[in-house]
Amino acid sequence: MTALELNDINVRYPGGGGLFDISLAADTGEFICLVGPSGSGKTTLLRTVAGFLRPVSGGMRINGAEVVSDSAFVGPDKRGLGMVFQDHAVWPHMSVGENVAYPLKVSGLKGAEVRDRVAQTLTQVGLTGMADRKPDSLSGGQRQRVAIARAIIAKPNVVLFDEALSSLDEPLRADLRGQLKALTEELSLTAVYVTHDRSEALALADRIAVLNAGRIIQYSDPQQVLNAPQDPFVAQFMSDAGLFPVTVAGGDSGGGRGDDGVVVLENGSRVTGFTRMHAEVDPVLAVGDGDARVCPAGEGHVDGTVESVLFDRAGWCMQVRVWDQALTVLSAGDRPRVGDTVGVMFTSGTLFTRESSR
Image (cartoon, rainbow, N blue to C red):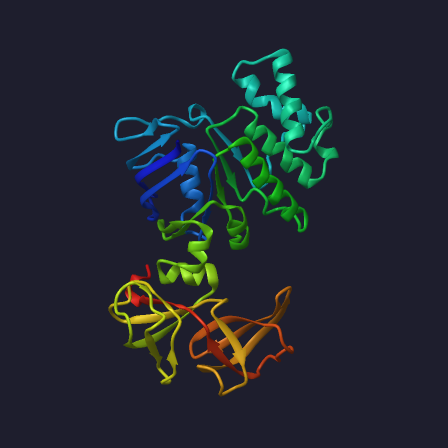
């Protein structure tokens, strides 16, 4: 069943900007992440789903019920949603149990049913026996669990998360991320989750919506977003890809895999092994952080200058300046030095038309 459906939603701000022709659907139990740069429309989209913003056009349904149309607008309190904020917004004058019980009491439930539901929900989020505690006696992670419990206790149609874990320190954040994913799967909760953290989105999401300038550029599963970007912007945002003008020298001129094709860089180097996406005119090769490796200077497709070096679990993570592009390249070998000239071999990439980038 479709839990959330948006059709051609448009939102306008007085000073310009907003959302443009947003269409998106989420099935029951699906975990959807919204990602994009600051100002891309992530929070605006979340607030529109919540009912805090009224679209100028378009339609929206939640669990099949119409909540936005040309003639109808259902307010936030009637949409059956839960919401978790970045700062958790747990009321300090209430106990944990009172915080969690609040949505039930607002709906008119009382007595034993409320107590039983509170106890059950606290157990689900790992806070068994803490109903009588005050928020100021809890850790940051525990307070965020209280906020999650409050958001899910009324069995909402959809739960909205606005940077819900971003204020927590690692490794607590990673731990709670795993628990949140497990909880939504266990309860078949439909979630819409805003995050600036690309790794978090890839870990949590069943599908990711990549936004830019108020538009959804790509909406697909994490593997496709990362490995088969549909637009140069998605490749740049998700994989820190560099864009290199090329000439198509041969091979398949249609869509799909271009492994038998050849592109030629501006320095004359010939590259194969790329994926072809909409590259009929003015082609560019997008090379992401998994599409290149370093080698001795003069032995790769291009040479570049090392601008920064950071250690990562996978090895040395380098920023290499190649012409006017900054590439992220991993190396498991010896640590390079800033300022070194290194060769860069393109092992894969995605071929686009430059104009397809928004």
